[in-house]
Amino acid sequence: MALTALDVFKHLPKTNCKDCGFPTCLAFAMQLAGKKVELDKCPHVSAEAKAALDSASAPPVKLITVGTGEKKIEIGNETVLFRHEESFYHETGIAIQVSDSLSVEELVENVRIINKKSYERVGFEIAINIVAVKNDSGDAATFTAAVSAAENASDLPLMLICDDAQAMSSAAEKIKASNPLLYGVNAANVDAMAKVAADLGLPVVVSADLDSLPELAQKTVQAGAADIVLETVADSFSKTLSNLTQLRRAQLKKNFRAVGYPMLANAVDTENAQMETNRAACFVAKYASLVVLSSCDDAHMLPLLTVRQNIYTDPRKPVQVEPGLWEVGDVGPDSPVLITTNFSLTYYTVEGEVSASRVPAYILVIDTEGTSVLTAWAAEKFTTDMIAAKLNEDGGAKDKVKHRTAILPGQVAVMTAKLKDESGWDILVGPREAMGIPRYLKSLSI
Ligand code: SF4
Image 1 (spheres, helix red, strand yellow):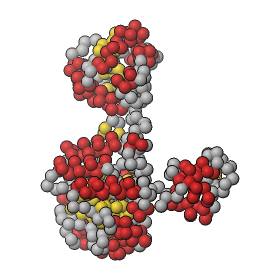
Image 2 (cartoon, rainbow, N blue to C red; image 1 turned 45 degrees about the vertical axis):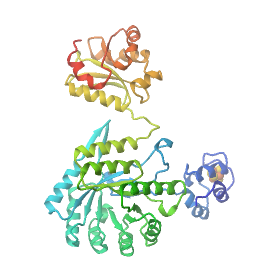
Image 3 (tube, protein in one colour; image 1 turned 180 degrees about the vertical axis):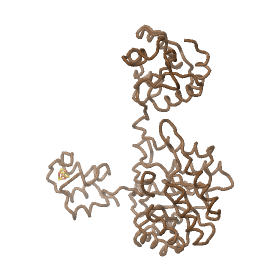
Image 4 (cartoon, rainbow, N blue to C red; image 1 turned 30 degrees about the vertical axis):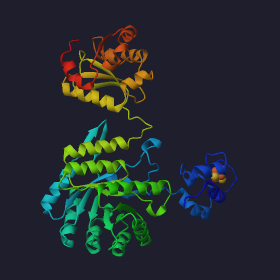
């Protein structure tokens, strides 16, 4: 059970010294019980009290790290059921499965394909996170060779899928320095597999049906495997999704410590890549911290990674680009000047269409606090005086081009006359939608 603010208060020094940034110990206790601050903000708490308060200060979903170095992935530590309540913090890891039944050459080729699955979207790189090597061969030596080959061919973290503890131990021992995720523990192998994870100090997946999962997870932790990831085994997609939701509610609403770990969902469907992607997207939304797939075609991976990026963007901080004058292509003094806002999605949509037109152009990006054109205009963050000032800024558009013509987004054509008066520039009305930009720019004569 979660501790209440009063339970927490009993363990604090009660001096109201304010060193934690709160006016009283009770105020700090209320924040701590609500998991809004960390216990170490109070420098005066005793070691005994710290131990007693561990359950109040620990996150409801433990943070687990897989891999090492730049490509490591952290999963868990979520605090809300719904993104709009605050934000989701650690995006779902995407793991692509490769089989040890392939020849080593084929396996390495597949791993290299996975390595390359990285895309740029709205200024960010979105990519696959984990290579999952599956022991389909049933042979320990083959599995170890495949795992070693995958590790050599990729700097992505690895997941080792094998239910034989001895085979897992041999393979994991070889690459333990890279902190792979073991998959894993089930009811039949719990003692042996938990011991492998504990001995090697590696994170491990615990798989069971919803009813058995808390007990199996406890047993694994008691065996010394402190970092675990949960998988609910169910006979249908809808049941798995329902289980993930129940577990997340148990973590956050009931503070049920036995299941306070990130969750994995297996979306693998080797017969139907589209269905696999659809399921994975649902698991990303609710509430998997790690999803395993078998296919990484661009046609499926890009939409999935886009869904993940959208869900794991902090809704309180619109994704923005730097305001200013951006150059697209080999611009010169005759290049057109387009005006837009600094909402990343808007900017990169415009930039993509300008690039596609092959007409070198300047894009004047106005600081609208990361809002789109119409939203910014309605909120008076995209005003004629702001745009006029930027068009005439020293070292900006007026010094880069010899003409005095700028293109306003078609959605805000209503601003044209006033902007023309205030800026002294000729204002053209551009297309209402960015997809009209290539044709528009090609037909332009400034
Ligand atoms: Fe109380 Fe500790 Fe905060 Fe001081 S720093 S007010 S003792 S909780």
